[in-house]
Image 1 (cartoon, rainbow, N blue to C red):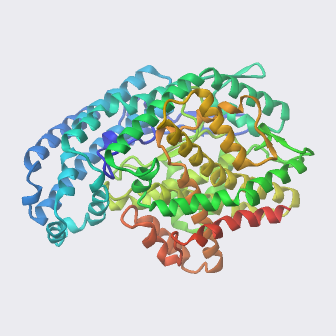
Image 2: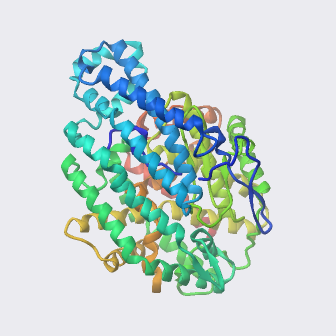
Image 3: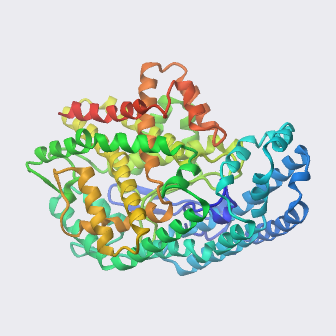
Length: 616
C-alpha cells in the first residue's frame, strides 16, 4: 500500500490503441443498427509508442527526479514552509509527467490487451516509470515524520497551505508506513510482483473465446447475450461462459490466491486490522461507515432482490428463474436497438436539462474523440473513464452494443468524465476523489438519464420495462456489489488459513450469490465459475462497495433535488469541482446529508424498494 496519490508508477488505472500518425483519421467500429462507433484519438497524450515527445518526457522526468532527490532527501525538516511548498509543487510536476506516460501506456493496453507488442510496451513503461518514481518515494515518508507542531508552522506559508488537503491525506497513512528501505523494496518490486499477476489475469481473460451457436464471441459479447430476448441464446451463452471460464479455473484460482496472500502479508506488516481496512483508508471513510452500509444492504436483501426476482419469475411464467434469465428482457417488452447517435442525444439532453454546463462538458467527449465505444477482439471488457492527468483530459472506454443498459453505461462514464474535468483545476495531487465519491457523479448521471427517459414515456408497458430495467441496474449496483464485497471478505479471511482451491472459491461464490439473489434464482451448473471474470477482485480489492455507496448516496441526493431543485445544480457542481480537497462529511453538508447516520443508507435503499412497489 502506497501513500495517497502515489507516484504514477504504482497507480493501477485503466489502459488502448496507438494512433498511426500525428493527426490520425477517425476509426469506427460498427454494429447492426447501431451506426458508426467512435474510436478514441490518443494524440493529445502521445502520437505513438515511438513518439519523440514521449521519449523526451521520460528523460526529463528522470533528470528532474534525480535533482529533486539530491536537493530534498533528508532535508524536509529544515525547509521553510515556502520552500517545502515549492518542493511539493515540483513533486507534483514530476509525478504528473510520469502519470501522463503511464496513462498512455494503460490506455493502449486496454484497447488491445492481446497485442504482444503493446503488452511489451506497457510493461517496459511500467518498469521505467517505477524506477524513476522510486526516487520520489522518500518525500511523503519524510513529510509524514515531521512533528505536528512543526508542520502546522510550515503550513502557515501560502505556498504550502495550497497543498494542505494533500498533506492531510498523506499523513493519514503515517502509522501504516514501514521503514524507508522496506517501502523502497515494495515499490521497486511492484512491476514484477502484483502488477505482473494483474497483467496475466487481463491477458488471459482477453484471449478467451466463447463458442455460442456456432460463432466465436469475446467475453463482452458473450455477457451481452445474457440479456438477449431469446431464452435459447441466453442459455447457450451462459453455458459457454461457464465452460470456458471453468477450463481456466486453476489459473484464476492461482492468481486470486497469490494476490490475496500478497495483500495479507503487506497488511499484516503495516498493521491494518481487517482485509478491507486499507481500502477504507484510501477512500478516507471509516470502517464503521462501510460496515453500516454493508449491514443495511444485507438486511434489505429480502425486500429488494429476493422480492424483485420473485416478481420477475412470475412475469416470465416460472416459479424460479434460471441464472441466465436474471437480466432477461421482460415478456412482451420492447428493447429496440438504440443507435449510437440516439444514445448520445439521450444522455446530452438529460445532462442539459439539469445543467447546461454539464452538457457542454459531456459534448466535448464526442467532439474531441475521447471515447472508444465499439467491442472488438482483444479489447478489455467493461467500461471506465480514465482521468489521465489534469493537463490533458479523460478518456472513456466502453463496449456499446445498442441496449438500454449501454445507454446507461454511457451516462455513467460521462458522469465520471464530467467530474474529472471539473476537478482538474485542483491540480494533479488533489483532483482525484476517493472511490466512494467518484461513483457519485457517475450514478447521478445515470439517474438523470433514466428520469428523463421515464418522463417522456407514456405507454404503460414501456414504462414498466424502463422501471424494471432501472431496478435491475440498481440491484446490480447495490446488492450485487455488496455481495461481491462479502465474497472478497470471505475469500481473504479464509486465505489466511491456507490456499483455496478453485472449488473452494466456487463454493464461497455460490453461497454468497444464493444469499444475495434469493430463492427465486437457480444457481446451477457452471455458474460456479462466474467469480473468475470480475476484474475488480484482481485490479482493486474491495473497490466494489464504492458502487453501493455511490448509488445509495445518489438516491438521497436525488430525493433532495426533487424536494428543492432551486440552486441544487450549483451546489452539485461545486461538490464535483472540489475533487479530493474535501472529505465526504464536508461535501454532503450543504445538502443536509450525513453518511455516518445509519438511517442515511436506509433512505437510499428506500428508493429502490419504492420502484419495486410501483412495479407490483
